[in-house]
Image (cartoon, rainbow, N blue to C red; front, side):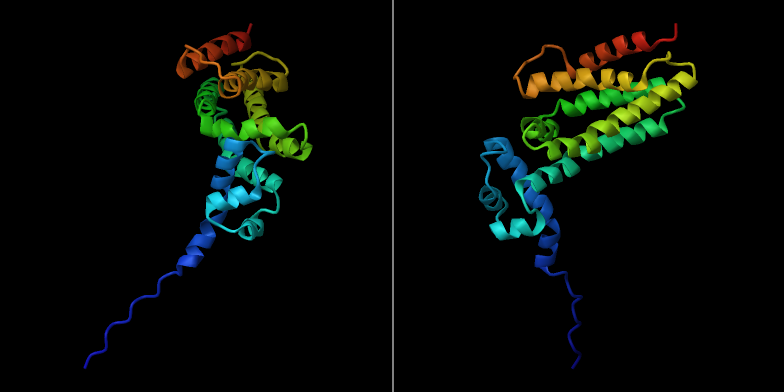
Length: 212
């Protein structure tokens, strides 16, 4: 009698779930923080939304502040890193690269989900300066350094006029953040489309950066 073939062992379900738990917890934290605000949210609420015990949440994140830092790392920091990679790779055509960065950043930050974590940070940074500092280092400084470097390469190539590169970077990012705050925090409903807004920003920006 021939023995039945043995089935290949499958990965235990609990192991696959354990690997996914940090993301499940962060998904729950973002939902609860958005609904209740950072101060009113409780770890119990987040655990319940994630379908876990409070103790299970603390295995991965030891505080609400740690959860917010985790959201910064997952939701926003990769976007800053992506923009930095574009700036670093686009030195051969600084103007086209800057156009791409402004257009992409304008479209991304127009999304309420993308701006949800920055909105939380803005709400708590004055009372939790370590959160603000973490966000600045991991997101704001990365974007500013990337654009400043791109401007310097544009000056060297004769495409952009000489100016303070840090100031240029802040002028690039400032209008994008202002529109996002007006929409997602102040509830403004602009008639201009995201694409038209980016084009208007770029037109003024390139006019100001043009070699004289």
